[in-house]
Image 1 (tube, rainbow, N blue to C red):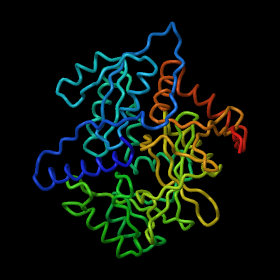
Image 2 (cartoon, rainbow, N blue to C red; image 1 turned 90 degrees about the horizontal axis):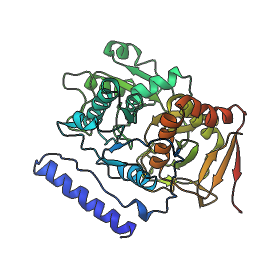
Image 3 (tube, helix red, strand yellow; image 1 turned 180 degrees about the horizontal axis):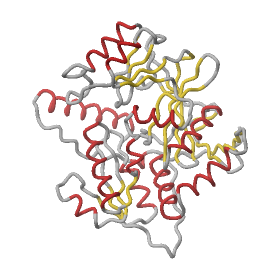
Image 4 (cartoon, one colour; image 1 turned 90 degrees about the vertical axis):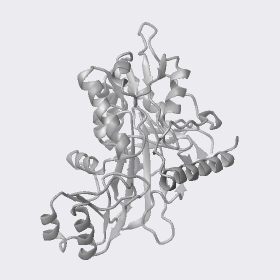
Amino acid sequence: MNLTIVKRCDVLKRLKKFASIRVLGYPDIRRPEEDNVEIHSASIVKAEWPKAMRKPFIGLTRDSNANPYWTKYRRFLENNNFDFEIFEYHRSDWCERAKEYDLVIWSPSSGPAELEEVKRKIYILEQKCGKKCFPDYETLLLCDDKVISTYCLEMCDLPVAETFISNSFTEIEEKKKNFRYPLVSKLFHGASSREVSLVNNPEELFSIARKAFSFHGRKTHNPYFRQKNYIYFQRFIEGDGLDVRVNIAGNAITGYFRKPKGGDFRASGSGIVIKEDLPIEAIEIALRTYRKLGKAMLGVDMMKDTTGRYWIIEISPFIGVRTPTQLKVNGVPGTYFLLEDGTLDFRIESYWPQELALKVFLEQNYLTTEEEWKKKHIDSALSKGTLRKRISYSQ
């Protein structure tokens, strides 16, 4: 089945689901999604595992995302001969079942309700049962939570765009005339620019705040979830309008640019993706962010201001993609690999980032430690000063 047919089938499936839930009122039961990862030309990720070391027995959860994570994890586990089985974690006996596994691989579904379930269960498994989880609880806290992500970025002295977050309506009333407009209003959760809007003056800001601090809260795209008792305003960055996404999975780096539609200012979710070579300045910021906040993988979204400086606007500990081809240099698909001497070595190889991330997690948690891994693969390169690119193919 070619990609065009797959996309059409996906559209029909979504329309059918929408009619069933929104029109007929049936339960919103999100079943695991399956896709054919082999129709894409993704290179195989191999894990070097000591023969004398027993491999962990793994419980693999399945997500209901349109572009699922779990099928990529399954591909990695099968290609590297790890013993695993599907872990049905929604059931009431989930905790007893989890005791059978050495490691549980979680494939978080999008949406606040789904993430809350996974957070609770990862906490119990790690803190009360002594089980390893991928991702761990600390990583999951950063998932789809712009508020805690921004706090962490600021505390790590990373170049995050100036952001005002408050849970005090009184403070907002006091400061509404002191901001430099326009501002960008966001919810703490949501992807693809959902609930992202431009705030042009104090009156518009006050209207948002008044709804958010009302008894019912402010409506969002999730009918069951409202913006309640907080606001999140980010400085609008004047520049070329593009945002750049840098994806890091271990020492493998990919990424692309996103462009807004027409007169819109929102690049994320526009569907206009430009796969070109990444600016070395943006890569360096992403690597420093990964060093301080990332573990197995991290996506870093940035925008460039009129002075040429890059600012982080969002991060994500999960990289969801439709195809392993996420970077092109001179029109050639591939991946940058960060070498210990600070070289960004471009190779004509494309990978599913989920597979790369799982490999890194296993290395950091079974073969060495996270800190030792980062010192070897990240610190040594960044300590050289300026990164440099190398193209490993004939142009």
